[in-house]
Amino acid sequence: MARVTRENHMLKSARTVSALTLVSRVLGLVRDALTAQLLGAGWVNDALSYAWTIPNAFRRLFGEGALGSAFVPVFTRTLENEGEKRAREVANGVISSVGLFLALLAGALVAAVTFISPATLAGWSDRIDMRQAGLVLWLLQVLLPYLAVICVIAQFMGVLNALGRFAVPAIAPLILNVVWIAAVVMAATRSDDPQVQVRWIAWGILLAAVLQFAWHLPFLARWGMGFRLVRPRLTPELREVGTLFVPMLLGMGAGQINVIVDRNVALAMLPEGGTTHIYYGLRVMQFPLGLVAVALGTAVYPTLLRLATRREDRAVATTASQALRTNLVMCLPAAFGLVVLAEPIVALLFGRGEYGAAAVTHTSSALVGYALGIPSAGLVILLNRVFYATGDTRTPMLVGLSLVLVNAGLDIALVGPLGEFGLGLATSITSILTAVLLLRGFRSRLDLAEGEHLLGGFGAVIGISLTMTAIVWAADTGVLRAVDEAARSTTWLRVGVGAGVGLVSYAVLASRFCPREWGEITSLVSRRRKAD
Picture 1: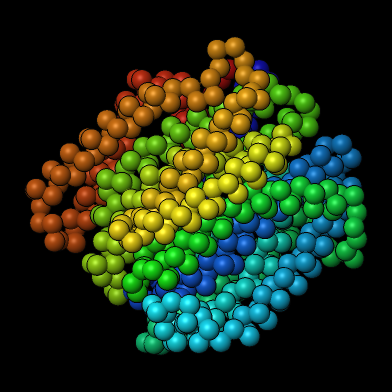
Picture 2: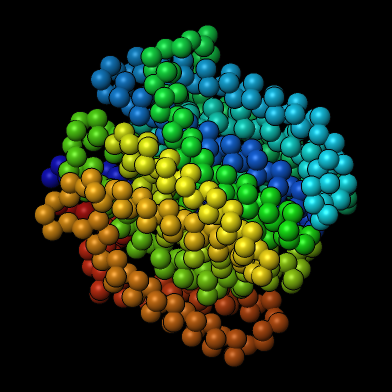
């Protein structure tokens, strides 16, 4: 009964995060669609895509990534062993110290960017002109302070997740998307100059960070974790966070280094619009990844930490196995479906206004390359959480760092002959290799129950996913033969029919050939807990 209760709690939490993530991702796609419609795929949007990559990478690394993963175990253990009052003191001390460090870091980066001349940046590649270089540098000066605020917010989110409060932090990304959308609307009504319009968007992003910070404060106070600034001190807890943070930074930082390398290669080696194409292709790929792997990782990490703290090794292995299987059952069909329907999906989302047919084609190619790595990227997210929960920061660090050069080499080798698809494919190959190495390291330390398999039903999931893909392809081909391909309504029809046929066929096949895994999925989306 304890195991059922634990799994139900994890799945219910994942369902909450996933539902709110769905709303956020939909708003995110709306924001991207409006931005693409306004700015197109030219050098202005390239500048925004590149400049946004830097603070966003810091957010994923310092906030949701290594720093959050280092802080949450310390906070959780303190909460378990010493109570809420002591946990609040630890949280305020660590977050205040981290906030000061990040504010100084952001200030130093802004100062460094200020001393870089547009001519210096333009000289980096013959594909970058002075206008674009100047705009990139201005955008960086405005957006870099975002990283300090949003990384502190991520620690607020970690505290609330550790308390079992998932809804409030999951709502926070909605604020960014709503404010960004409002900024796009304001930009469109206030100016016809793309360089002025993109500046409206940049200031909107910075405003969103302030609003997200304010959003968390009353809820932290309500649940006994009211935040207040304290004088930074090198406490044992802060020292432990720092000790955990360094290897996590090297491990999880590899993924963000890869993203930055991708953007730099695109900016230097692809024609105008290339950076925008891969940015939007990656954004669409992250939609199912966020709904499944990120939601599962967010929900399962506090559970794994509590189980590991109590030395319940068998429960850790079982919980991790369930999360990994759920990821594959949901991400494999999503990946195959995106490959088949990439072009109509991109056309539906972005193919209007200044975002023309050529941009849609290039973005679709990037999406296909990225989509191939969705299942493995989900496994990497979850496996990193499992390793960190069990106190192993070394394995993810060694695996991540060993593949940074592999990703860079693949980027350079594939971008020439394959363009945007090559950059996406390089990322997917790297994530597959990372997942394989992490799985090998994790398998050797498992304590699964007899008859339990880490990736049970994997072969059957691949088989039914391929069958679903063939059915979706046949349905899409039938739609193209029956209607006018050039009509705008055809795009809606192709996406609607393809998605509907895919969902129905996969549900029928999965319930028949993967009953256990499909039962776990239905319990994830069910409104009621299953009985024992």
